[in-house]
Image (cartoon, rainbow, N blue to C red; front, side, top):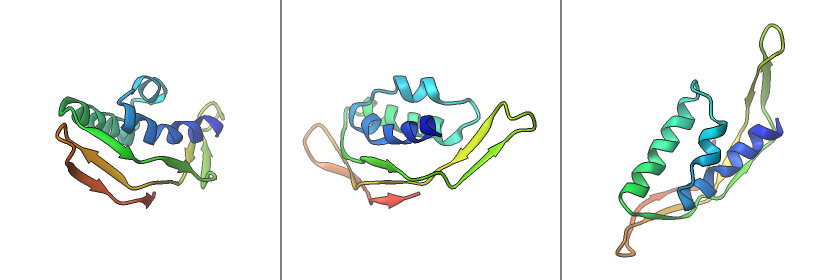
Length: 102
């Protein structure tokens, strides 16, 4: 569970830095959210935009499911993140995402 909470805590860091190394090394191929978020970060980087905000705070696990032989677990977490501003190279805000809890 600690690994899952750490993973979600990377959200703001990855947005702000574009550093996907840990994010992608921990992602599974089945995680659609993980891949979609990585694609979004790449799009921001390719546009040479920066991000301010987005710091995330994972909450306590909502649910943990084990497979039949208990060799794998699916952990469902909630997390909140701060307001996110995407800024272009001219310093203008081009997108704002509201603070949210997922």
